Length: 74
Image 1 (tube, rainbow, N blue to C red):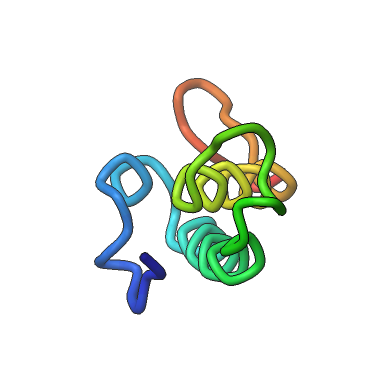
Image 2 (cartoon, one colour):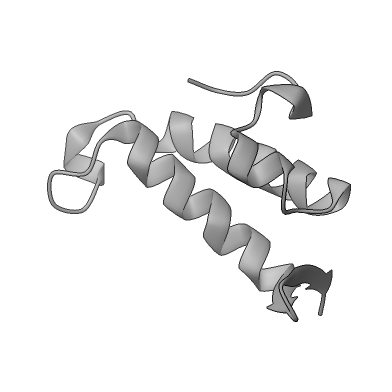
């Protein structure tokens, strides 16, 4: 289900990512949720939600990296 606000994101996202990274995650998740609604567009038998979370984390990792247990901008 798409996220309307940052407060609705999963706790593992809210608790570890800085606000800007959360914004990237939310935007990427919502975009992927719409893009991969057709099961034929997804890899294997991944669910729509699973695919959207993978896309969202990949988007975050393009601009952020985990260093010393914390996420920071590259």
